[in-house]
Length: 604
Image (tube, rainbow, N blue to C red; front, side):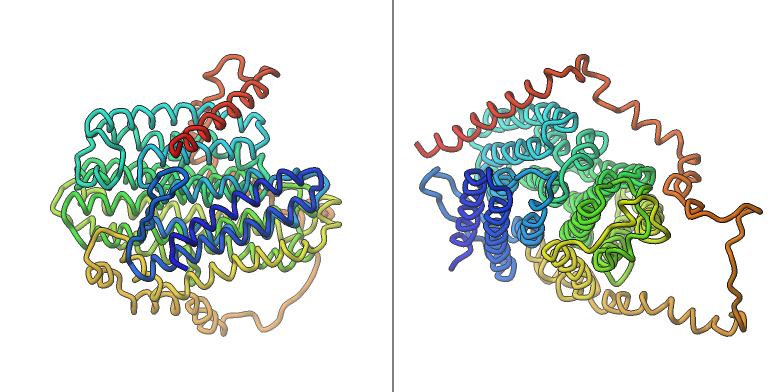
């Protein structure tokens, strides 16, 4: 089977699973099995097609007769397809057991339709088709939130993004008479088109300050839906930004600088806001913003390298950004599904109401620890590898001829280091408050192991995080096929022996230090009751998430106030009206129907 046949089969499996799950939605458990198995098969087909293209380094292209539209599989979009396929398999399997909970709703139609439209988005060979399919995907996400306040906000901001992208398409059509990427390749699109595209897709990717929908949508959605938002929906936004940047030939320097600044702001503010949150899904959503910023830093460094004709900077920037894109999807899927498993057994997303979960759910606890360590970029896990290559791009940036590049290089390295420190604090907070200590509620006390498919999915993703870190020296060369450089340049820019040495040596360092200082330990230990300032010790006398974050909250109070100033809800009168959800639901359905008609009519 060739790659085109496999990707078409994947879309067909997603579509069939969506329709069957909808028809059988009256039986939630059966609907969940149909949606999960169909989604897993479609994801495996997507993964197989993308892997074939990535290994060969060749582009596959074909015409789809039904819609008379050309699809294209390139090494670049294969990276997104690998991400969708790998994460989609385990999210789909997890979703089967998710349907067994009495308080969950059947979501097979929307989940599989979202996956199908996301795959169609990244293989589109036409800017208009890309925008239409991305809009269908986003509308599926809106409905997955249940059209609550978060869904309303996403829908409203999405209309703004769609308007900007439609205007960009109109400008491109007026200037060049086509929207096909092949015809536009090398044509200067113009600063206005680039800005419209970056803002429009930036709303989908959640680039700060365009992130208003992200925290609430993740916090109120089911765990499988939240995982899809982070690993699929927001990654499509990054794909759109990269596509519109590379389509117009060599970009100007200020494009790369703008992406670098936007990435740094998004990474730092996202990491800071995450530390303040106690709802675990909202906390992970802010950490998704942080990692979107880190990926954008890598892309910005690569774009800057294109503008300055620096092959080493291009390779380090794009390889680091793209590898972190895959890695983030893996460990964030681990964390969202792990948090969903905890909710499945306790009914709580507030980490202040948990505690002691590590003893009740040891498998999920261990997998979550791996995911949190990867999120904090600790070696030898996959989160470390991508960020290390991005650091290398900053060092190359500091050696550029342009003054602004030499200025930004060290500043961005310091900023990313501070962001990493915030991520380590957040890792300690989440794991310590949630999984260690004594249970704080009866639900936490009565928690038990998650269902088999849930545990298997979370553990498999955690193992992928380990494999993605340990196998970095062998995986990075594959990404060289996807960047606009000769293969040899991309392969020699990042030192594979150095990466292997770091991944082996860094985890061993704590044990070496432990052996070195072993003689300083006390000869004996004494055990006794904890001292509580003269009061009798109680189980409630434990560190809290609020207390853990308080020092940082006080020092960055001015930055944290921006959350309230930039809240888009306050700009819209009548937002909380009871009639608004029904209105938005109708508008979203109408728009979704119109977009489907547009896609079908293209083949008429």
